[in-house]
Image (cartoon, rainbow, N blue to C red; front, side):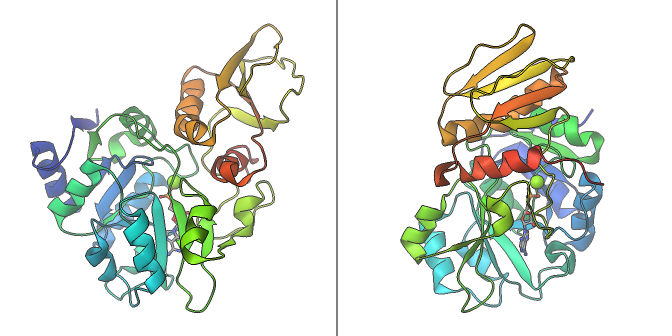
Length: 330
Ligand code: AMP
Ligand code: MG
């Protein structure tokens, strides 16, 4: 059995034990406000290599470094632009990842060989206490096998990664549910670009920065370009997920089938489980992965889900649903 310890914040024996494991090159899964991360010392290439091995993550997909404050972030980049400072003051700690030109101290494996590094300061007392206790940035992609659903509680981590992780810090379900918004500021003179939509919507970034671009693949699920970390199929449940227009008549195709409705549950044929989520992007973001995990655990083979409205507020949820429902390629 994977070791699991309850954790609440700074000063606890669980944090000290986790920090010691990390300092020795081990892997510790820990909570953030978005999803659980699979943490390693971000300046130790061998430790980061263990993350890739545990997740089955392609070497072309870089990992995010988690820092406790702006000073720790500044030490990892060659240039900290004024935009980064403004964004960090407004959104850190929080679900915003900034991509910036990497300093030489950032191991190549963290950057997947590229010139930039992704940095975030998570808004979770356990994550912050752990980073401070180790005194180094923590590499921490989502604590799941590559391409699978991200974990929003400790049990999801245990079932996805099992023995591959040395310790799981458990602080209950995460509060935000979807992975951070990723903003690329790495090219001077080029407009900031959202690489992954997330809990912080474009309008909030634009209010601070002026116009930002959206990476095309992120807004057009189903027609996604190949780029590091932006694989078409990602965040996927075991069940076959199909997105349908609200109110579409569905019929049972055999096997256990669920229908996830937004706002109102339509009449359903016998034998299909109806699940009602509110027509509220934030609430769906919080619930989505946990619901798909539950349906997987319960052995559902098909999940129909109503496509959310095509508005900016639903961008992050639509992005994840597009990838979770994409056909398996390899
Ligand atoms: P996750 O594995 O869920 O934590 O996702 C991490 C995401 O951050 C992936 O989509 C990566 O491609 C992205 N990422 C990390 N580092 C960089 C970078 N230097 N440039 C662009 N994207 C990055
Ligand atoms: Mg992930």
